[in-house]
Length: 152
Image 1 (cartoon, rainbow, N blue to C red):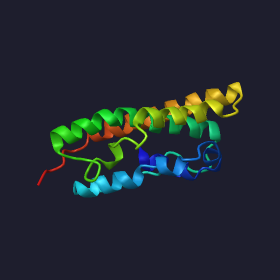
Image 2: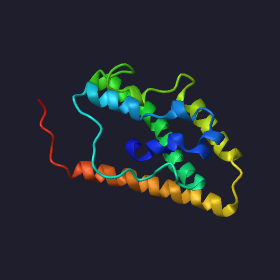
Image 3: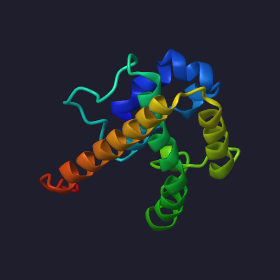
Image 4: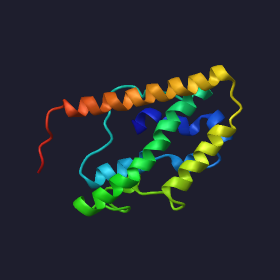
């Protein structure tokens, strides 16, 4: 999913609305985590969005990515307690922002709320979020139906 949305972090409209957008990018941390675990970023299909996506749609996709940080805090604790992964090995992308996951989320939603959007554009934000959720679901279904990976 984060490979799908990586182009959002260079989207001019998003950069204007969300000053800390670059630090919210997680793909590099995911790549390091996968490397720690002996794997890499999956290749293959073309990413679902590019930097030319309309701003309202981009906001919807980013809403899903940012919201996943809230669940990431729970997953981080499980990864730490059960798998001995941590913010420097295997679970970087799940680690909460230094300000805390809730505060980081609120700063994003404040920027989203401040975006000057017409009603039709707000509907496009919702459609973008729905498309992002569907992309996540598709990735999960693909992984659940994939051949098991041999553990060495």
